[in-house]
Image (cartoon, rainbow, N blue to C red; front, side):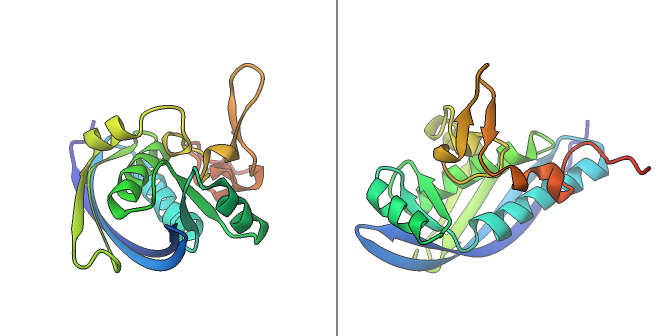
Length: 186
């Protein structure tokens, strides 16, 4: 097993809805990551999943407290991507949920131990978030603990037998060339 630690920076934009108001926010995150696999291919797939999730899923979504059902329904009716959070979308809440989701989609090939998150709305404050605190905060059967491509619990459905599937079958990791199994050429 590899004991390498890497760091990677990302930036992206999302909107947020808080206290009845709409804001656009730019986020900068720095990830401190442990490499848990010797497979360079798996390392690349894991990092490419993070890149895809941040830049194609979270980017241009709106962060909303999951209890704001009427607002969420209104945004979805306008075909706006909604990222549901367990509390109002303050930076430290969003950061903990994001750390958990990124770890979930990397499926232990890489593991984020620490993340520093800052945003254009944080007035220069950056939050240092560790995985153990995030795990205590966001435990349970929620979208952020699933490797599926989703932004809310409503995008997950329980099938008979207790299997969890996404409602957006066209966005599976395998369809994006980001599955752990390498496709064989015929």
